[in-house]
Length: 435
Image 1 (spheres, rainbow, N blue to C red):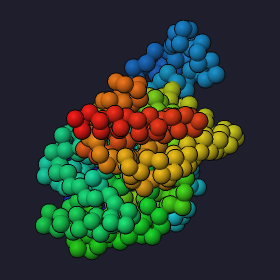
Image 2 (cartoon, helix red, strand yellow):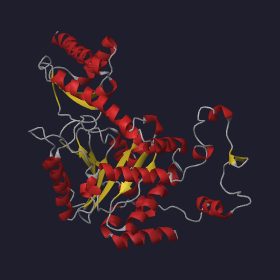
Image 3 (cartoon, rainbow, N blue to C red):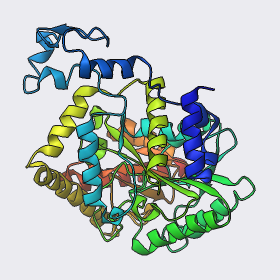
Image 4 (cartoon, rainbow, N blue to C red):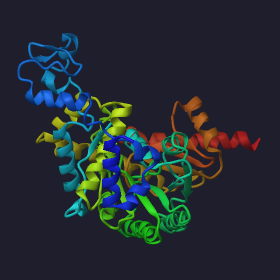
Protein backbone atom coordinates (compact mmCIF):
# COMPACT_ATOMS: atom_id res chain seq x y z
CA UNK A 1 0.00 0.00 0.00
CA UNK A 2 1.24 3.47 -0.92
CA UNK A 3 2.66 5.36 2.05
CA UNK A 4 0.39 8.32 1.38
CA UNK A 5 -2.65 6.02 1.49
CA UNK A 6 -1.49 4.67 4.83
CA UNK A 7 -1.09 8.21 6.12
CA UNK A 8 -4.53 9.34 4.91
CA UNK A 9 -6.25 6.25 6.27
CA UNK A 10 -4.46 6.55 9.60
CA UNK A 11 -5.59 10.18 9.88
CA UNK A 12 -9.21 9.35 9.11
CA UNK A 13 -9.22 6.37 11.46
CA UNK A 14 -7.62 8.38 14.25
CA UNK A 15 -9.93 11.38 13.82
CA UNK A 16 -13.15 9.37 13.42
CA UNK A 17 -13.16 5.59 13.22
CA UNK A 18 -16.79 5.61 12.08
CA UNK A 19 -15.95 7.66 8.98
CA UNK A 20 -13.10 5.30 8.17
CA UNK A 21 -15.57 2.40 8.35
CA UNK A 22 -17.87 4.23 5.94
CA UNK A 23 -15.22 4.22 3.20
CA UNK A 24 -15.55 1.69 0.40
CA UNK A 25 -12.66 -0.50 -0.64
CA UNK A 26 -11.86 2.03 -3.34
CA UNK A 27 -12.29 4.85 -0.83
CA UNK A 28 -9.68 3.28 1.42
CA UNK A 29 -7.29 2.69 -1.49
CA UNK A 30 -7.51 6.04 -3.29
CA UNK A 31 -5.08 8.93 -2.78
CA UNK A 32 -3.84 12.01 -4.58
CA UNK A 33 -0.15 11.62 -5.50
CA UNK A 34 1.93 14.39 -3.99
CA UNK A 35 5.10 13.43 -5.82
CA UNK A 36 3.73 13.15 -9.34
CA UNK A 37 3.61 15.46 -12.33
CA UNK A 38 1.16 17.90 -10.80
CA UNK A 39 3.08 18.43 -7.57
CA UNK A 40 6.40 18.83 -9.39
CA UNK A 41 4.77 21.24 -11.84
CA UNK A 42 3.37 23.29 -8.95
CA UNK A 43 6.84 23.48 -7.40
CA UNK A 44 8.32 24.53 -10.74
CA UNK A 45 5.65 27.20 -11.17
CA UNK A 46 6.81 28.79 -7.94
CA UNK A 47 10.58 28.45 -8.48
CA UNK A 48 11.38 28.00 -12.17
CA UNK A 49 11.92 31.64 -13.08
CA UNK A 50 14.00 30.98 -16.21
CA UNK A 51 12.42 28.03 -18.01
CA UNK A 52 9.49 25.86 -16.86
CA UNK A 53 9.49 22.65 -18.90
CA UNK A 54 7.10 20.63 -16.74
CA UNK A 55 3.37 20.49 -17.41
CA UNK A 56 2.01 19.55 -20.81
CA UNK A 57 0.70 22.80 -22.19
CA UNK A 58 2.15 25.04 -24.88
CA UNK A 59 3.19 28.66 -24.31
CA UNK A 60 3.70 31.48 -26.76
CA UNK A 61 5.22 34.81 -25.71
CA UNK A 62 4.64 33.87 -22.10
CA UNK A 63 0.93 33.13 -22.50
CA UNK A 64 -0.98 29.90 -23.15
CA UNK A 65 -0.90 29.14 -26.86
CA UNK A 66 -4.35 29.44 -28.43
CA UNK A 67 -6.18 29.75 -31.71
CA UNK A 68 -7.54 33.10 -32.79
CA UNK A 69 -10.72 31.38 -33.98
CA UNK A 70 -11.45 30.43 -30.38
CA UNK A 71 -10.06 33.45 -28.55
CA UNK A 72 -12.07 35.92 -30.61
CA UNK A 73 -15.26 34.55 -29.04
CA UNK A 74 -13.69 34.75 -25.57
CA UNK A 75 -11.90 38.07 -25.85
CA UNK A 76 -13.24 39.28 -22.50
CA UNK A 77 -11.06 36.70 -20.75
CA UNK A 78 -7.33 36.51 -20.19
CA UNK A 79 -5.95 33.35 -21.86
CA UNK A 80 -4.45 32.25 -18.52
CA UNK A 81 -7.98 31.95 -17.10
CA UNK A 82 -9.38 29.66 -19.76
CA UNK A 83 -6.71 27.60 -21.56
CA UNK A 84 -4.43 25.99 -18.95
CA UNK A 85 -5.57 23.03 -16.90
CA UNK A 86 -7.56 23.92 -13.81
CA UNK A 87 -6.30 22.28 -10.59
CA UNK A 88 -7.96 18.89 -9.96
CA UNK A 89 -9.69 20.38 -6.90
CA UNK A 90 -10.85 23.42 -8.90
CA UNK A 91 -9.90 27.08 -9.12
CA UNK A 92 -9.00 28.28 -5.61
CA UNK A 93 -10.89 31.57 -6.06
CA UNK A 94 -14.03 29.72 -7.18
CA UNK A 95 -13.88 27.32 -4.24
CA UNK A 96 -13.64 30.22 -1.81
CA UNK A 97 -16.45 32.15 -3.53
CA UNK A 98 -18.74 29.12 -3.41
CA UNK A 99 -17.95 28.48 0.26
CA UNK A 100 -18.75 32.10 1.08
CA UNK A 101 -22.01 31.80 -0.85
CA UNK A 102 -22.92 28.61 1.03
CA UNK A 103 -22.53 30.35 4.38
CA UNK A 104 -24.65 33.32 3.35
CA UNK A 105 -27.45 31.09 2.05
CA UNK A 106 -27.25 28.56 4.91
CA UNK A 107 -26.99 30.45 8.21
CA UNK A 108 -27.22 27.12 10.07
CA UNK A 109 -23.60 26.54 9.00
CA UNK A 110 -22.48 29.40 11.22
CA UNK A 111 -20.04 28.05 13.78
CA UNK A 112 -19.94 24.60 12.13
CA UNK A 113 -16.81 22.91 10.80
CA UNK A 114 -17.02 22.08 7.12
CA UNK A 115 -14.53 21.81 4.30
CA UNK A 116 -13.64 23.80 1.26
CA UNK A 117 -15.88 22.80 -1.69
CA UNK A 118 -14.08 20.66 -4.27
CA UNK A 119 -15.10 21.42 -7.85
CA UNK A 120 -16.80 18.58 -9.72
CA UNK A 121 -17.98 18.18 -13.29
CA UNK A 122 -21.51 19.06 -12.10
CA UNK A 123 -23.91 17.09 -9.89
CA UNK A 124 -23.73 13.63 -11.43
CA UNK A 125 -19.97 13.64 -11.09
CA UNK A 126 -20.29 14.65 -7.43
CA UNK A 127 -22.71 11.79 -6.75
CA UNK A 128 -20.44 9.37 -8.57
CA UNK A 129 -17.55 10.48 -6.33
CA UNK A 130 -19.73 9.76 -3.29
CA UNK A 131 -20.50 6.32 -4.72
CA UNK A 132 -16.83 5.59 -5.39
CA UNK A 133 -15.66 6.71 -1.95
CA UNK A 134 -18.39 5.15 0.17
CA UNK A 135 -20.43 2.49 -1.67
CA UNK A 136 -19.40 -1.14 -1.76
CA UNK A 137 -21.33 -4.08 -3.16
CA UNK A 138 -24.30 -4.82 -0.92
CA UNK A 139 -24.28 -1.48 0.92
CA UNK A 140 -27.70 0.09 1.36
CA UNK A 141 -28.39 3.37 -0.44
CA UNK A 142 -31.64 4.89 0.81
CA UNK A 143 -33.77 7.45 -1.03
CA UNK A 144 -37.50 7.97 -1.74
CA UNK A 145 -39.59 6.15 -4.32
CA UNK A 146 -39.91 9.43 -6.23
CA UNK A 147 -36.34 9.95 -7.38
CA UNK A 148 -33.90 10.78 -10.13
CA UNK A 149 -33.13 7.65 -12.12
CA UNK A 150 -29.39 8.40 -12.24
CA UNK A 151 -29.08 7.36 -8.58
CA UNK A 152 -29.51 3.76 -9.66
CA UNK A 153 -26.76 4.05 -12.26
CA UNK A 154 -24.37 5.79 -9.86
CA UNK A 155 -24.85 3.56 -6.83
CA UNK A 156 -26.30 0.26 -8.03
CA UNK A 157 -25.02 -0.31 -11.56
CA UNK A 158 -21.56 1.22 -11.06
CA UNK A 159 -20.89 0.18 -7.47
CA UNK A 160 -23.20 -2.78 -6.78
CA UNK A 161 -24.97 -1.16 -3.82
CA UNK A 162 -28.53 -2.14 -2.92
CA UNK A 163 -31.21 0.47 -3.52
CA UNK A 164 -33.67 0.86 -0.64
CA UNK A 165 -36.71 3.01 -1.41
CA UNK A 166 -39.37 4.38 0.92
CA UNK A 167 -42.54 6.35 0.13
CA UNK A 168 -41.74 10.05 -0.29
CA UNK A 169 -45.13 11.14 1.08
CA UNK A 170 -47.08 9.85 4.08
CA UNK A 171 -50.87 9.58 4.29
CA UNK A 172 -51.09 13.32 4.97
CA UNK A 173 -48.97 14.26 1.93
CA UNK A 174 -46.05 15.25 4.15
CA UNK A 175 -42.48 13.97 3.87
CA UNK A 176 -42.50 10.42 5.19
CA UNK A 177 -39.87 10.73 7.91
CA UNK A 178 -41.26 7.66 9.67
CA UNK A 179 -40.57 5.51 6.61
CA UNK A 180 -37.09 7.02 6.30
CA UNK A 181 -36.37 6.16 9.93
CA UNK A 182 -37.55 2.57 9.40
CA UNK A 183 -35.42 2.21 6.27
CA UNK A 184 -32.35 3.46 8.14
CA UNK A 185 -32.91 1.32 11.24
CA UNK A 186 -33.39 -1.73 9.01
CA UNK A 187 -29.65 -1.46 8.22
CA UNK A 188 -28.60 -2.10 11.83
CA UNK A 189 -27.20 -5.54 11.03
CA UNK A 190 -25.03 -4.00 8.29
CA UNK A 191 -24.02 -1.07 10.46
CA UNK A 192 -23.90 1.30 7.48
CA UNK A 193 -26.24 3.27 5.24
CA UNK A 194 -25.92 5.91 2.55
CA UNK A 195 -28.92 8.27 2.60
CA UNK A 196 -29.59 10.62 -0.32
CA UNK A 197 -31.77 13.66 0.44
CA UNK A 198 -32.79 15.55 -2.72
CA UNK A 199 -34.64 18.83 -2.12
CA UNK A 200 -36.23 20.33 -4.12
CA UNK A 201 -37.10 16.82 -5.17
CA UNK A 202 -36.79 15.60 -8.73
CA UNK A 203 -39.40 14.65 -10.03
CA UNK A 204 -42.01 16.11 -7.66
CA UNK A 205 -40.66 19.59 -6.89
CA UNK A 206 -41.23 19.05 -3.16
CA UNK A 207 -39.19 20.51 -0.29
CA UNK A 208 -40.09 19.73 3.34
CA UNK A 209 -41.00 22.47 5.79
CA UNK A 210 -39.02 23.18 8.96
CA UNK A 211 -40.93 20.64 11.06
CA UNK A 212 -40.43 17.92 8.46
CA UNK A 213 -36.76 18.86 8.23
CA UNK A 214 -36.39 18.33 11.97
CA UNK A 215 -38.08 14.93 11.60
CA UNK A 216 -35.61 13.95 8.85
CA UNK A 217 -32.66 14.93 11.02
CA UNK A 218 -34.18 13.02 13.95
CA UNK A 219 -34.59 9.93 11.76
CA UNK A 220 -30.90 9.93 10.83
CA UNK A 221 -29.90 10.66 14.42
CA UNK A 222 -31.92 7.65 15.57
CA UNK A 223 -29.97 5.50 13.14
CA UNK A 224 -26.64 6.86 14.36
CA UNK A 225 -27.61 6.31 17.99
CA UNK A 226 -28.51 2.73 17.08
CA UNK A 227 -24.92 2.20 15.92
CA UNK A 228 -25.37 2.74 12.18
CA UNK A 229 -22.74 4.74 10.28
CA UNK A 230 -24.57 7.10 7.93
CA UNK A 231 -23.26 8.94 4.88
CA UNK A 232 -25.87 11.71 4.64
CA UNK A 233 -25.81 13.11 1.11
CA UNK A 234 -27.74 16.31 0.38
CA UNK A 235 -28.32 16.50 -3.37
CA UNK A 236 -28.98 20.23 -3.62
CA UNK A 237 -29.19 20.43 -7.40
CA UNK A 238 -32.17 22.82 -7.38
CA UNK A 239 -31.15 24.73 -4.27
CA UNK A 240 -32.50 28.28 -3.81
CA UNK A 241 -35.58 27.72 -5.99
CA UNK A 242 -37.94 27.70 -2.99
CA UNK A 243 -41.29 29.31 -3.84
CA UNK A 244 -43.35 28.73 -0.69
CA UNK A 245 -43.09 28.16 3.06
CA UNK A 246 -40.59 25.31 2.97
CA UNK A 247 -37.04 24.92 4.19
CA UNK A 248 -34.91 27.53 2.46
CA UNK A 249 -31.64 25.96 3.60
CA UNK A 250 -29.90 22.70 2.89
CA UNK A 251 -30.17 20.06 5.62
CA UNK A 252 -26.38 19.88 5.37
CA UNK A 253 -26.20 22.68 7.95
CA UNK A 254 -28.41 20.91 10.48
CA UNK A 255 -26.57 17.63 10.01
CA UNK A 256 -23.09 19.12 10.36
CA UNK A 257 -21.54 18.05 13.65
CA UNK A 258 -24.70 16.37 14.92
CA UNK A 259 -23.19 12.92 15.59
CA UNK A 260 -19.83 11.18 15.02
CA UNK A 261 -21.58 8.44 13.04
CA UNK A 262 -23.15 10.90 10.56
CA UNK A 263 -20.97 12.24 7.75
CA UNK A 264 -22.81 15.05 5.91
CA UNK A 265 -21.83 15.44 2.25
CA UNK A 266 -23.23 18.34 0.23
CA UNK A 267 -23.41 17.93 -3.54
CA UNK A 268 -24.51 21.07 -5.36
CA UNK A 269 -23.54 23.31 -8.23
CA UNK A 270 -24.04 26.25 -10.50
CA UNK A 271 -25.83 24.01 -13.00
CA UNK A 272 -29.42 24.83 -12.04
CA UNK A 273 -28.85 27.50 -9.40
CA UNK A 274 -27.22 29.88 -11.87
CA UNK A 275 -28.96 28.54 -15.00
CA UNK A 276 -25.74 27.28 -16.62
CA UNK A 277 -26.62 23.66 -17.33
CA UNK A 278 -24.00 23.11 -20.03
CA UNK A 279 -21.14 24.58 -18.01
CA UNK A 280 -20.94 21.42 -15.84
CA UNK A 281 -19.68 23.10 -12.67
CA UNK A 282 -20.58 21.43 -9.39
CA UNK A 283 -19.14 21.05 -5.91
CA UNK A 284 -18.77 18.44 -3.18
CA UNK A 285 -18.33 19.53 0.45
CA UNK A 286 -17.87 17.56 3.67
CA UNK A 287 -18.73 18.50 7.24
CA UNK A 288 -16.81 17.05 10.20
CA UNK A 289 -15.51 18.20 13.55
CA UNK A 290 -11.87 17.65 12.57
CA UNK A 291 -9.95 19.78 10.07
CA UNK A 292 -7.49 16.91 9.61
CA UNK A 293 -10.35 14.58 8.71
CA UNK A 294 -11.78 17.09 6.24
CA UNK A 295 -8.38 17.49 4.60
CA UNK A 296 -7.95 13.73 4.25
CA UNK A 297 -11.42 13.31 2.71
CA UNK A 298 -10.74 16.14 0.28
CA UNK A 299 -7.44 14.57 -0.75
CA UNK A 300 -9.19 11.28 -1.44
CA UNK A 301 -11.84 13.15 -3.41
CA UNK A 302 -9.18 14.84 -5.51
CA UNK A 303 -7.61 11.42 -6.00
CA UNK A 304 -10.88 10.17 -7.52
CA UNK A 305 -11.01 13.24 -9.78
CA UNK A 306 -7.39 12.79 -10.86
CA UNK A 307 -8.05 9.11 -11.66
CA UNK A 308 -11.18 9.78 -13.73
CA UNK A 309 -11.44 13.20 -15.40
CA UNK A 310 -8.08 14.61 -14.17
CA UNK A 311 -9.66 18.05 -13.67
CA UNK A 312 -12.80 19.94 -14.57
CA UNK A 313 -13.05 22.42 -17.46
CA UNK A 314 -11.26 25.69 -16.73
CA UNK A 315 -13.33 28.09 -18.89
CA UNK A 316 -16.65 27.31 -17.23
CA UNK A 317 -15.11 27.64 -13.76
CA UNK A 318 -13.85 31.08 -14.77
CA UNK A 319 -17.27 32.06 -16.14
CA UNK A 320 -19.04 31.02 -12.92
CA UNK A 321 -16.46 32.79 -10.79
CA UNK A 322 -16.90 36.03 -12.73
CA UNK A 323 -20.68 35.78 -12.29
CA UNK A 324 -20.36 35.27 -8.54
CA UNK A 325 -18.09 38.29 -8.31
CA UNK A 326 -20.40 40.52 -10.36
CA UNK A 327 -22.23 43.27 -8.42
CA UNK A 328 -25.29 42.51 -10.57
CA UNK A 329 -25.30 38.78 -9.84
CA UNK A 330 -27.93 38.68 -7.09
CA UNK A 331 -30.29 41.06 -8.88
CA UNK A 332 -30.09 39.05 -12.09
CA UNK A 333 -30.62 35.76 -10.27
CA UNK A 334 -33.60 37.24 -8.39
CA UNK A 335 -35.14 38.26 -11.71
CA UNK A 336 -34.94 34.67 -13.01
CA UNK A 337 -36.20 33.32 -9.68
CA UNK A 338 -39.34 35.45 -9.97
CA UNK A 339 -39.98 34.09 -13.47
CA UNK A 340 -39.67 30.53 -12.18
CA UNK A 341 -41.89 31.28 -9.18
CA UNK A 342 -44.57 32.76 -11.43
CA UNK A 343 -44.57 29.57 -13.51
CA UNK A 344 -44.88 27.40 -10.42
CA UNK A 345 -47.69 29.54 -9.00
CA UNK A 346 -49.57 29.55 -12.31
CA UNK A 347 -49.22 25.78 -12.54
CA UNK A 348 -50.69 25.33 -9.07
CA UNK A 349 -53.49 27.80 -9.86
CA UNK A 350 -54.46 25.81 -12.94
CA UNK A 351 -54.32 22.48 -11.14
CA UNK A 352 -56.43 23.80 -8.27
CA UNK A 353 -59.12 25.16 -10.61
CA UNK A 354 -61.08 21.91 -10.49
CA UNK A 355 -61.34 21.51 -14.28
CA UNK A 356 -58.94 18.54 -14.35
CA UNK A 357 -60.06 16.73 -11.20
CA UNK A 358 -61.58 13.77 -13.02
CA UNK A 359 -58.28 13.09 -14.82
CA UNK A 360 -55.63 13.49 -12.14
CA UNK A 361 -54.50 14.66 -8.77
CA UNK A 362 -51.00 16.03 -8.21
CA UNK A 363 -48.25 15.44 -5.73
CA UNK A 364 -47.47 18.38 -3.42
CA UNK A 365 -44.85 20.72 -4.89
CA UNK A 366 -43.43 24.04 -3.75
CA UNK A 367 -40.00 24.44 -5.35
CA UNK A 368 -37.60 23.48 -8.11
CA UNK A 369 -38.31 22.81 -11.78
CA UNK A 370 -40.96 20.10 -11.80
CA UNK A 371 -44.28 18.81 -10.61
CA UNK A 372 -45.85 15.37 -10.94
CA UNK A 373 -49.40 14.47 -11.96
CA UNK A 374 -50.97 11.31 -10.54
CA UNK A 375 -53.22 10.04 -13.31
CA UNK A 376 -56.55 8.48 -12.34
CA UNK A 377 -57.78 6.78 -15.51
CA UNK A 378 -54.96 6.16 -18.00
CA UNK A 379 -51.49 4.66 -18.11
CA UNK A 380 -48.72 7.27 -17.90
CA UNK A 381 -46.56 5.82 -20.67
CA UNK A 382 -49.54 5.45 -23.01
CA UNK A 383 -50.45 9.08 -22.37
CA UNK A 384 -46.85 10.24 -22.81
CA UNK A 385 -46.57 8.67 -26.26
CA UNK A 386 -50.02 9.94 -27.28
CA UNK A 387 -49.18 13.51 -26.23
CA UNK A 388 -45.95 13.34 -28.17
CA UNK A 389 -47.47 11.88 -31.33
CA UNK A 390 -50.77 13.77 -31.47
CA UNK A 391 -50.06 17.06 -29.68
CA UNK A 392 -46.31 17.55 -30.03
CA UNK A 393 -46.00 17.75 -26.24
CA UNK A 394 -43.16 16.12 -24.32
CA UNK A 395 -43.58 14.87 -20.75
CA UNK A 396 -41.91 12.18 -18.64
CA UNK A 397 -43.78 9.00 -17.61
CA UNK A 398 -42.72 7.51 -14.29
CA UNK A 399 -44.35 4.19 -13.47
CA UNK A 400 -48.01 3.52 -14.24
CA UNK A 401 -49.62 6.66 -12.87
CA UNK A 402 -47.06 9.47 -12.62
CA UNK A 403 -46.40 12.06 -15.31
CA UNK A 404 -43.66 14.62 -14.69
CA UNK A 405 -44.16 18.09 -16.12
CA UNK A 406 -41.28 20.59 -16.16
CA UNK A 407 -43.01 23.95 -15.75
CA UNK A 408 -39.51 25.46 -15.72
CA UNK A 409 -39.30 25.40 -19.51
CA UNK A 410 -42.81 26.66 -20.34
CA UNK A 411 -43.61 30.37 -20.57
CA UNK A 412 -46.24 31.32 -18.01
CA UNK A 413 -48.77 32.36 -20.68
CA UNK A 414 -48.55 28.91 -22.29
CA UNK A 415 -49.13 26.82 -19.17
CA UNK A 416 -52.91 26.89 -19.56
CA UNK A 417 -52.67 25.50 -23.08
CA UNK A 418 -50.20 22.87 -21.88
CA UNK A 419 -52.48 21.43 -19.20
CA UNK A 420 -55.58 21.74 -21.38
CA UNK A 421 -53.76 19.67 -23.99
CA UNK A 422 -52.65 17.07 -21.46
CA UNK A 423 -56.26 16.82 -20.29
CA UNK A 424 -57.47 16.43 -23.87
CA UNK A 425 -54.89 13.69 -24.31
CA UNK A 426 -56.25 11.86 -21.27
CA UNK A 427 -59.75 11.97 -22.75
CA UNK A 428 -58.44 10.65 -26.07
CA UNK A 429 -56.77 7.70 -24.38
CA UNK A 430 -59.85 7.04 -22.25
CA UNK A 431 -61.95 6.69 -25.40
CA UNK A 432 -59.52 4.25 -26.97
CA UNK A 433 -59.21 2.09 -23.87
CA UNK A 434 -63.00 2.07 -23.35
CA UNK A 435 -63.57 0.36 -26.68
